[in-house]
Image 1 (spheres, rainbow, N blue to C red):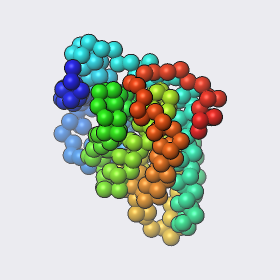
Image 2: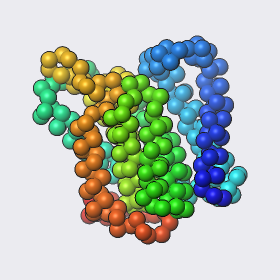
Image 3: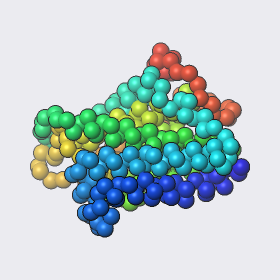
Image 4: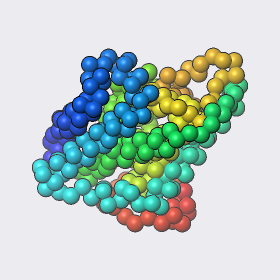
Length: 296
């Protein structure tokens, strides 16, 4: 099947499955059905049960669409699933995500006078960990696993990175406080995630990075996550009390993030990505932490 036909079929099916699973959410939380966008955003930021069941609905809808298009329509197994949850790849990705978030925060604290408030740990951090892991798995399965892999295997390699990353960025267009810097940074993050996938043909690496990136910037350090607010362990604020320019969307709306992500994209392209851009199709591979450290 032509790749564009496959992708064009995927999105309406994805929306259909989302509606079906969200129907269950609306039955459990009928007040969410008629809620305005502001009311819905408030509900999803304050009600942990609604937040969790909503993300489960998105997770199920995403994988239902992927399996339906791959196995029922194209009659092909989505091979990226074989490399999706490899523990060593997840661990490596988590570490890289932590390094990048910490680097952004260090630059922020060096360029802006800040104060840090400790709010303490509570059970919500475990719930957020589950939710952000579901988000990382479902978004990476769709964006890098299904869309990017199919484009990469059937079209121009550079074009596949650009298009899949653009789709990934536009998927966040309805998030609160979305702006052009946020769109640019999520686009750049999409490119970087494609590079991480290509590094060892292993989807577990960008999943681990995506998970730690969201968990650290939101519940740990107190920034919004693509416009989504959470309870936090720490809160980093401007010492003057004024809001950061990127406050609404979070670190992904910061020009510091633009510079840091761009640096990592260039570094990985020079050291790794360009060497494999003209190689064969993406196939899942085994992963070894020692090998990854040697290549990093």
